[in-house]
Length: 118
Image 1 (cartoon, rainbow, N blue to C red):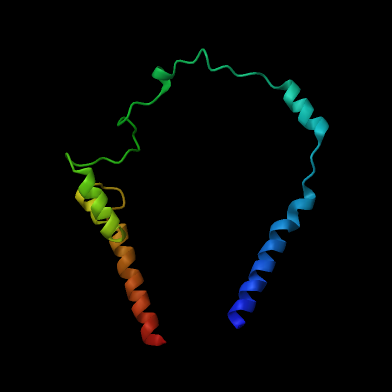
Image 2 (image 1 turned 30 degrees about the vertical axis):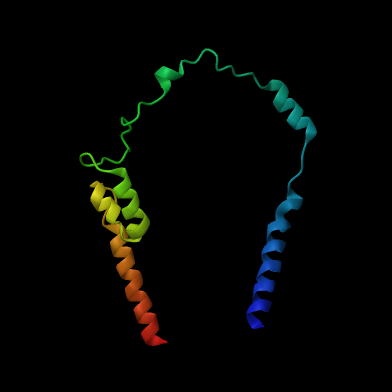
């Protein structure tokens, strides 16, 4: 019963906080009309999208994959062992490959420590 009351109080509090700041927002129709009248129309007919669109694989921030890897194998590894980051090792990516196993080990140690202290 205590959990229900706490949950109910949290819901009421979050609803009151969400609606508390709405009184400060006012719509000024004259300012909106002025903004619309001073705006200009943008026409995309003269833009050559073939030139401005980036080519796939040329992005400097893209993750590099080592060699030809099978996407199905990578997906299956990510689905079952994604929390360990095994799919990143399989794909040979360099960005944050070590982070998921470290986080999992730390969480397991923290959980074990909490269970021992309880």
